[in-house]
Length: 510
Image 1 (cartoon, rainbow, N blue to C red):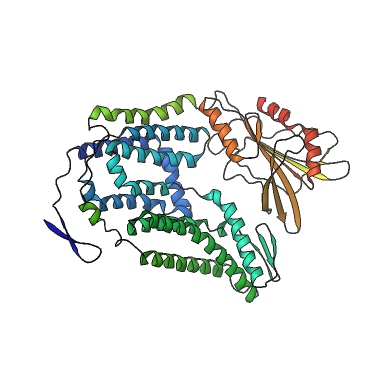
Image 2 (image 1 turned 30 degrees about the vertical axis):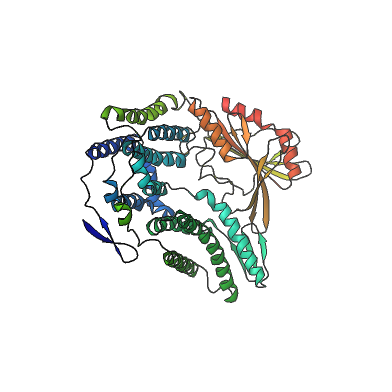
């Protein structure tokens, strides 16, 4: 018998740990081998994750996630050695589902889905090879692995909008005159823009990772875990609003001498550090255990369970077959079309009735992966200007996608201040309306995605159309159609005369 201290300073008895079940070496070896095979087959996905960790400071924490997860498993080693690993058929079903998700992500060239599915397959392999009882005790270390996936950029626009609205509300509350237009904030002695770097996504993700890790180490009660995790999500969003308000207030009080450049960054990170330290101090005040002390759980005898299959090597082969089947299908069915050609470097401008050709202005959208592009200017009989931009893709593949993070409708010098969906214009389906500014100038940009003959304003629908078609071995042409006008009535007249669908179908047939 041995003695261990409990949380209240007393002692409880614990029997010496029995030897590990002989099935453990086989389970660990099969898991390691199959996981290595999976990563080798999907090395491009794993490599893309590592590249993002090393090049994007928002996701530098990715290098620490796997070692941290393994350490969390190591902390529970005494508890795990009391269990018998068993093959779990539900893990095999989860592995197949994650492989299907990877195929959908590969078909749509959505790297975030591929990366999430890869991590999900590693988790499913753990459940399959070690069993439900083991997976239940290492549920958090397995879930923690998903922090390796570099996702979160989609939250930047709503975070920008929230930060601007929050800061403006506080400025008005203390009586500072302010003009608010989207992400632009103007006070009597300065103009401020809530840029993407000021959205707070870095602090939000970093805070979520640390909050989740702290909650796992400190709490045994589930309600405390989820409460602290919820606070860890909401607090950095609100704190970023206060940070933006503080920067503008300091600039106002010092007439712009402070809270700019380096001062801006130093103030922000000092502010965030103080917020995180206070959050952890508060969380520690009602912790259920000393951080990382799982000795009491290890001393509790595990419940008897016979769920799953007893460990026999032939029963592990289906997992290997699933791992091999997904990439094999992608390579044989979802490859690029035979003889696909991007065509000429530029699309010919269309002839639009009642609209005369005119030189385009300084609006230059950036779609670097497009096979062919068109930027043409037009002028109505009343003298009002319109500019048509088309980015055409003979077929979509990684880096050449109509929905892609590097694509920018704003172009150099223009700033998006508002985005919304508008009802069909000129017989078109509902489209996306972006309002952009450059100095005192303003422009409205209406845009649609066109994938396989379908128009949509939603990037998610555009990706879904691409994924479903490619999954069946079809690589449809795609395009982005955008029209810059001064008034929505002009857009309706233009599209009624333009007929974009026949134009795009002709471009795809060339």
